[in-house]
Image 1 (cartoon, helix red, strand yellow):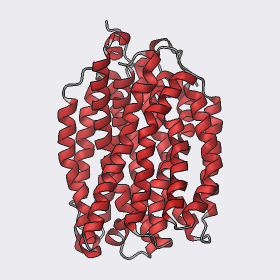
Image 2 (cartoon, one colour; image 1 turned 90 degrees about the vertical axis):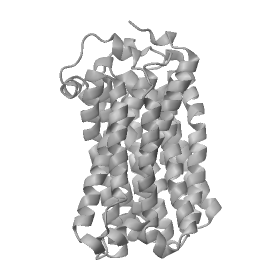
Image 3 (tube, helix red, strand yellow; image 1 turned 45 degrees about the vertical axis):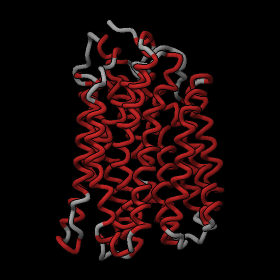
Image 4 (tube, rainbow, N blue to C red; image 1 turned 180 degrees about the horizontal axis):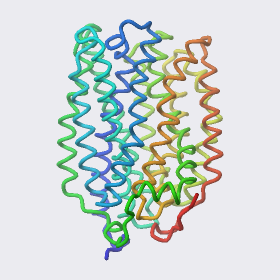
Amino acid sequence: MHDVRTVAAPSMSRLAAASLVGTAIEFYDFFVYGTAAALVLGPLFFPTFSPVAGTLAAFGTFGVGFVARPLGSVLFGHLGDRRGRRPVLVLSLLLTGASTVAVGCVPSYGSIGVAAPVLLLVLRFLQGLGLGGEWGGAVLLTAEHAPPGRRGLWSSFPQVGPAVGFVLANGVMLALSAALSEAQFANWGWRVPFWAAGGLALAGLWLRSSLTESPRFLELDDFARVPLAEVVRHHGRLVLLTAGALAAGYAVFYAVTTWSLSYATERLGVSRTVMLTCVMAAVVVKGALTPLMALLGDRFGRRPMCLAGCAACALWMLPMVALLATGEPLLMFLGILGALLAFVTMFAVIAAYLPELYEARVRCTGAAVGYNLGGVLGGALTPIVATALAAHGGRVPWGVGLYLTGISLLSLGCFALLPETRPVPVPAVEPVTG
C-alpha cells in the first residue's frame, strides 16, 4: 500500500514538471490547428466557398476534434481505470503527435480535390481522440500523488500546459508569418508547426518514461469491469453537471484565442502579427496566474472560485466584444485579458475539483468524460456560432457577447448545483450519484 501524503516535495516537483511539459506538447498540437483554421485552412481546403463560408468550414473541422475528445476520454479512461494512469500518458501522446505531423503533410484541395478536407477531418478526429485521454491521465497522476492540503496547487501545473502549448504554437505561427511572404506562408509555411510536433512528441515521451504510477491506483483492489457503464449508472447527473459547468470556460477561451483571430484579421483588417501578439500576451498572464488561483482554491474552496469565475465571465463578455471591435491593439488586449482572467479563476482549480468528485475506481473515466463533454458544448460550437453571428451583425458583434453571456449563466447554474470537495482527501470523498 502507498500513502499519497508520504510523497516528497522534490518528487512532486518532478511529477508536476513532467505533467506540465507533456500537456503543453499535446495542447500545442491541438492549438496549432485552431490557429491554422482561423488564418489559412479555409482558402486552401475549401476554395470554392466564400471567405466566411470557408472559415466556417475550417472551424467545422476544428470542432470535430472536440467531438472526438469525449470518445478519447472513454477509450483512455477505460485504460486508466483498468491498467493505470501512466500508460494513458504515453499512448495519448503518441496518437496526438502522429496525427498532428500528418496534418502538415495533407495536400491542399488544389492537388487532390475533396480528399484533402476529408483527410483533414480524419486527422483532426484522431488529434481530439488523443487529447481526450491526455487530460485525465496527466491530471490524475498529479492529483493522486499530491498531499490533500496542496492538491489544488500541484494539480494546477498540468493546467498551465495549455497556456504554454498555445504560446508555443502561436509563437511559431507568428514567427513564420512575420518572416515569410503571404504566398510562402500559404504554400508551405503553415505546415512547419505541424511537422515540429514530431520532435516535441518524442521529447515528451522521453520525459514521461520515468514517471511512476499513481499510488492511489496501486491501492485499488476492486476495479470497475466497465468504467463507463458504472459512471453512467451511478454518476450520470454529475457528468452532465460538470459538462455544463465547464462549457463557459471552453466557450470563452476559444472565443478569444480562435474566433477573435479570424474576426480581427478578416472583419477589422488588423494584421495577423498584431492580433497573435495580443492574444499570446494575455495567455502568458493567464498561465502565470494559474498556480496562484489554484492556491486560492486550496484556501477558499474549489466551488467558490468556479462560481466567481463564471460570474466574471457573464459580466465581461459584452465589454469584451466592444473592446475587440475598436481594432485598437491595447484595448483588444485588455478585452482578451479580462476574459482570460475570469476563465483562469475557475479552470485553475478544475484539475483538483473534478477528480475529487469521483471515487478512485472510475475517476479516470468520470473526470475526463465530464471535462471533455464540456469541450463539445463550449469549445466545438463557439468559433462556428461566433463567426456566423459576427457576419450578420454590425461592427460590434453584440450577438457574440450575448451568446457567451448566456453560456456563462448556464455554467454558473451548474456550478451552483455541484458540491464543495476541499479539503476532504480524495479517498474519503463520497460519490455523487445520479
